[in-house]
Figure 1: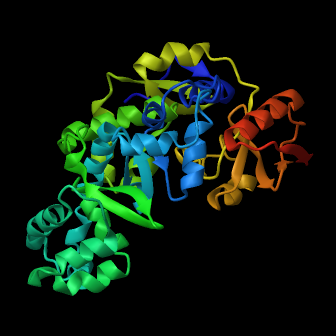
Figure 2: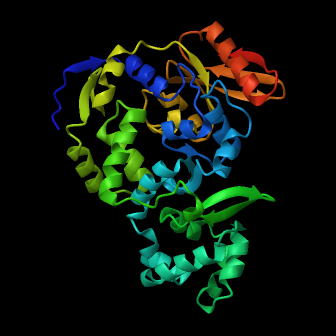
Figure 3: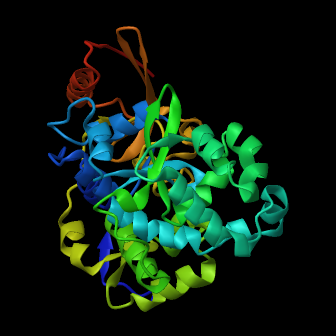
Length: 371
């Protein structure tokens, strides 16, 4: 793909366009499942942060909307990027899981030795897991108890008793199971093919290009480095595969000059990108929000170097015009905002956002600003 570009924009424009795509300026009015689909994936290691990440992008959100979407099958929960739990729609989940499962990590010698399951054992093991679940939802421990009734899997009971986190992951990657609501604090598992919206994993050559386009539509303008971070480091999709998918989309991607950086966007988004007006909005986002995670905390255009460690450690970001400019925390009835930007924050925008967060969490919060 040629590095020459005919479109030149600023980073302020690029981030403003991305804020619109992320339903942050203006705030959207989509359902929880549609919001998850717009973001591609929502990190869900911390349920409260995941819910706030979705709710803060909708003017009509209500507590429990995300849980309802999981219950009705329009959102699934699976181990995905970097082995962490994520919320996804069934279609996007299938696409990303096809990439993740292509690495066949469960066939590594270390896995075979640790779990006593050879590569040839996995088809029967997967079938046994599906049979054990049937139409029910079981905790990891309960699943282990059912499997242990079969001599071939009796040796795995201690693994399931200990949580079996690593062993469960390939079962999600291959589309056998997804995670359900917690029961007494324990994750539950159920068969993914019992979800009417689940259509199975697509072929890798179909899923790969789709995933590339999806990333540029949500996190563009982006570079090939960003793509390798998201699909390579995140899903172990393989650098050669990613580069080939990227090159094969020459007709659908457009190179743009963003203050000297050659980045790419989907062709259908070029007009909106060039027409974007820099945003002055302040947004209070939860820790590990996709706004920061999608491009990676190493992207200084979104996360300045001095705030990278805080973002990596799950601090709640304050963004202004799409750039992380500080952090916030709730203490009792106080909303404490620490501003680290060079310019003073837009007071009226910060106050409006404070009121919006108060409504989302159902608590009147007194704004306290420090610099």
